[in-house]
Length: 94
Image (cartoon, rainbow, N blue to C red; front, side):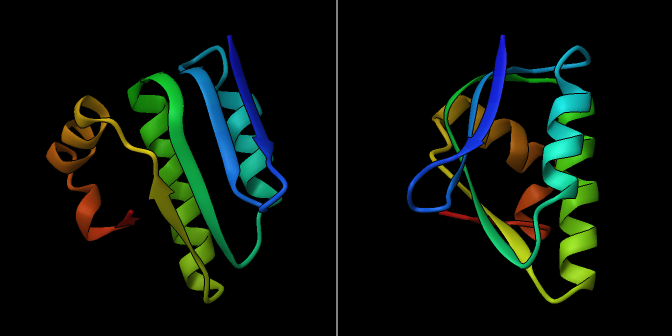
């Protein structure tokens, strides 16, 4: 199961599994994000390569418009996956 929503602080919370099944939901949600946004990964259990691609596409669009994504709540395993994928050069990690 996957959920994506904004909390009271306007942080985008990702919950569950971001995979091929949930990719359209994530893509549609992130397409409506403007400016700068924080993505909280503390409740995300799994991210597939399609999810990584969605994040990169959203980041490119936002950076081109003068904004960008900040990735927060990264556990050790997910942080390692993102570093191995070269995401430190594309995103800010908190």
